[in-house]
Image (cartoon, rainbow, N blue to C red):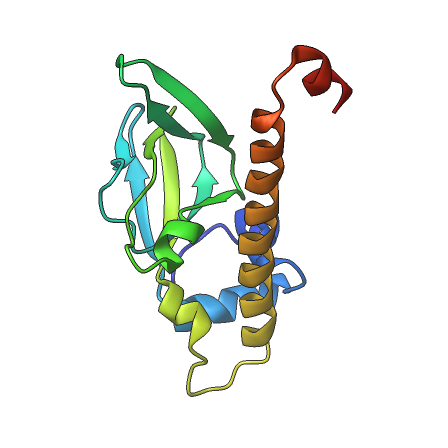
Length: 163
């Protein structure tokens, strides 16, 4: 069994509705890869490979974009229990759209999407719940980004404030 703080996974939306005992059992089937990053450590480079879903167990991770002028814009800060890379890891390209790095000493658990989407031979009862949670997370992310596009297409400041 993998030594992982189940408490951090209990707060993760990917594991919503799954008990701590089930999380402990599923870690054997999911075969996640834990990784430690020092402050400023690069987790994923923009346009680089992103083949796994990351779950932050400890520390804080930043998702950033660089402008053509070289400025770094923080798009999101991910705290323990948060996930990143789910959209990229499920896409055909499997490329990260952003640069991801540790804002402080952090531990991340990486899970291959195939381990979630393909039921194991044991037909674990939690597997369906995990797959539903992943689909819901990706759908929520798509709706969130769609809302952001709506805000960006509004021309006037008054219209933006009203929205």
